[in-house]
Image (cartoon, rainbow, N blue to C red; front, side, top):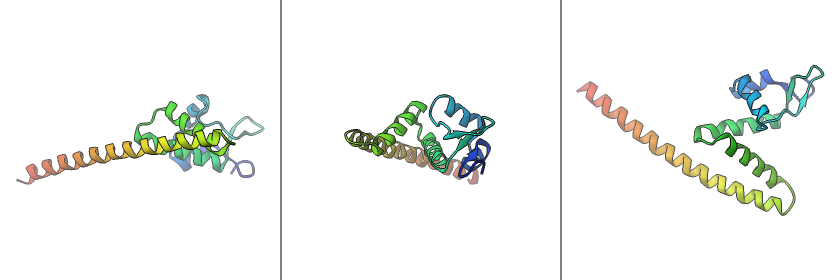
Length: 127
């Protein structure tokens, strides 16, 4: 850990499996802003930043765009805010949840089709 309770970008990259370039890009577009900077100007991240980055990372396989990732993060922030933004944020999160279920189902169907294809190839090879 760098400063007390904070980590440098290299540690964050190692813990998340994302590249330094990706994390820097997320900072540049405002998707994941570091919680602090060292005296030397290096980005510093907290566990909350790590959790937020893992959420972003888990959205990628479901095909969410960077813009949609930002929308989700704003909805999460709204859901933690005060009324009426809390209710708006909760509604947006419910919509994201429904959409994530739909995307997962689509991926499951694609995976099943891929398994069928592999089975067909295997049967032709072994015949």
